[in-house]
Amino acid sequence: MQQALGKEIANAWEGAWNNGDYTPLRNLLSNDFERVSKGTESTVDANGFIQQIDEMRSAFPDMTTTLQKVLPSGEDIGFFWTTEGTFTRPLGNVPPTGRRVTTSGATLSTIKDGKIAHEQATWNMTALLADLGLPSLASAFETVDSEAPDSDETRERLKDFNKQFVTGVTVITAHDDQDMPRGLAANAYCSVSLDPPLILVCVQKTSSTYPSLFRSGHIGINILSTQQHETLEVFASKSPDKFANVSWHRGPNGTPLLHDSSASIEVEIKERFQALTHTIFIGRVRHAEAIDNNPILYKAGKFFDSEGLQPL
Image 1 (cartoon, one colour):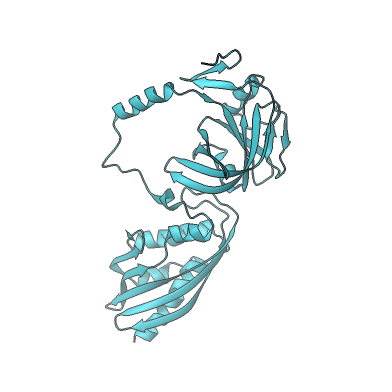
Image 2: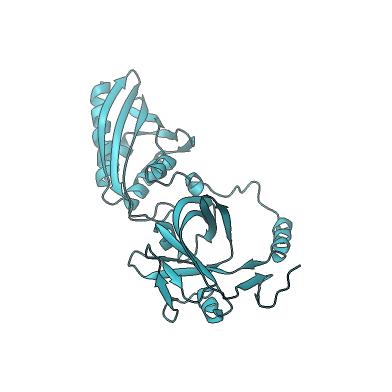
């Protein structure tokens, strides 16, 4: 009995994952079905499970899933599987990287009255991202804790704090999937270490440039100089082609670097940490260049010329 049911479930499971035929699998799930992902301990019902499959198929259009083993044991049936596919469309708020991935896992299904009542899966989205070479993206699928929101007063005090911090202005650059240069202005940059030469930069996920930065292997970071007022205005705008009237050259790894910048570096992305609304890129510097142009300074929403600053 369990062996025949295991074969029926296997056919329905492969049909759902490989062909998008969800009806046979949905008919095998009990009304109170729940699926628990080990590690995150997240739980979904039948509709949530079908939605997960659909989102995966959308993100990996060429995905194929193969069941390696089906092992019935009492009221339980174990399924061991392998999936291959190319990450070509967004998955949740994670932009596609174009990488090919092979991932595998196991699912333990508990049968009740001829239907699947419960599933315990060893695999989850975090495991998939790790297989994609993005192990630090576990929180990409988390949401803001609505039960403990930050107060308006906290936000205002943070604004006051940030107004007292003086920074330079950088333009973060990369190429999109059509090899067109893309970029955005940012001041959330800092050096992490000199040995090894590591930096970090924070980018808001809603930026139109964000997907290009995320999928790139290298990015450029340009410290704008006082000779680049017009460049600053362009990259702070929503212009569809910010490079139309901006002079730039390619770094050794092909990344766009802006002419007349006080300094520019080309960085190999090593990590992409999630901070809900932002991604923190950690990169290793592979190329650096600098000229004697004074940098633009930024404080409290205003820009300043750094020429003539007096040392203490």
